[in-house]
Image (cartoon, rainbow, N blue to C red):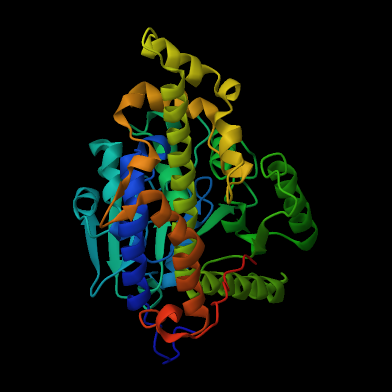
Length: 431
């Protein structure tokens, strides 16, 4: 499909409007109530405008780097990712599009605010030395970014990397549109590190794809046993009704071995490429849905902080010790109906509420007196913060999403002015 001459979709107008909605309607409330200190997920302009990200995870030497080389045709070039039977990848390698082959040091990537990787600076200089970017003039990378990760090693050396490996993985997991977890027939055991990784993937099951690589090394009967053993190992870790998609093939440039099910492997490879293409085709829908999900969480956080503050003001008297009063509220919010009051509001699901324990730490860093009530977060010219974010969630973002599906110019789509009388449909659907 990369050889097709059809022009790529121009979403610059959508992107510009999405950034405007975020900066005008979501970010003010996010900053006012210090949401980033609760979730530690700061959205930058680089992240809003970034391409879809495909993340490769899994044990060491299962073929992650070889698979990327194969997909991009980097074999036998000086920029192919190094591969071997021993643990070879020790860096987080980001493959991006560029006019010519070029490597970029992690320190440079983090310093460039235009890129989506600037927040990685918080993991320290030791990590940035283990981060590398490679720009490749490849048509696929015009539409997607690949991230190769160090293989999971089930021993104590994992803890001696010199940087918070699991926290870095979580950062990439939170931003990935597609996550390939790669195994091979010789590495099916699940140890503590892999178990930790799948705990970090909780809630992202729709993005996970399991890959059983090097499948043409096995005879039919052995392949069936290995396939069953893989599910047996992963079943306790993936506690969902519908198991993730598993691709069985050999992702490298060599011919399949004779007397194997090469027709099946070829179909699996095509299916994986179709899955990858689907993520690319839905990149704007996914981006808008992601920003809307973020806005919902920011709104709920602001409502909770407002409720904590209102309860604190109601319980305070002239003779009260403010510190003791608020400690009582934070220790037992259910006694003051903090969370139940929020659930009584519209558009709030109990499944979106943050952990109560998180607010003990949050208010331990941020005194309650440093916040204002939502009713005081209004101005004559700018309007109220809460009304603006609610309008973004219920009208502006769904309208922007629908404008993509209707094939209209989102910059010109305004039913208030044109009187079109049609509400754009939200065509974003999870498969």
